[in-house]
Image (cartoon, rainbow, N blue to C red; front, top):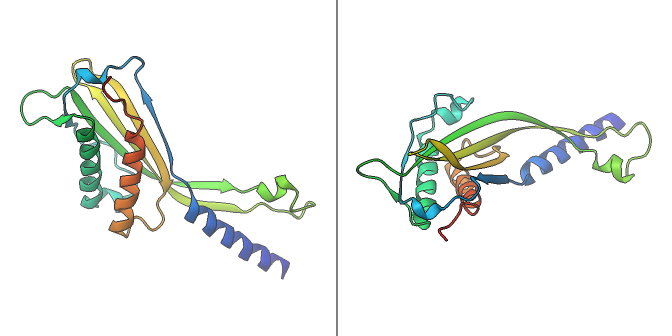
Length: 181
């Protein structure tokens, strides 16, 4: 009975952790970057590496919505999509889905679960990672990289959820994108 209670508790904790998992977002910018010298951008070629998950590779909504969200963020910073000539910046993205495992030792660490019988719950879930690179086309140097990681549960089969997660990831990444001085 005790083992069954432990398994039920682990399942509840697992659902709570993956359902409430926060999106991790960060970025890197080239030191001293003067974004004001750039005016246009274009998309680079598709990534030669698959995402690692056919559910994402074969989903045209993912690519279309992601590119639309990035283009909206670039326009908000005064950058135009190059329709002719060579762009100042090239954008490239890579998306990946991988299995993640987390061990929740909070109860043991806080003393809520005394003794050796306290087994921390192990949570397994799929996490999506999105990386967006912005490259100076004249120097071919990476000038900015943003990345986000979040659980993909419920996203792959639901376009509304996917759109919300893409919008949140791109918005939070580009909040770190430099603005002209």
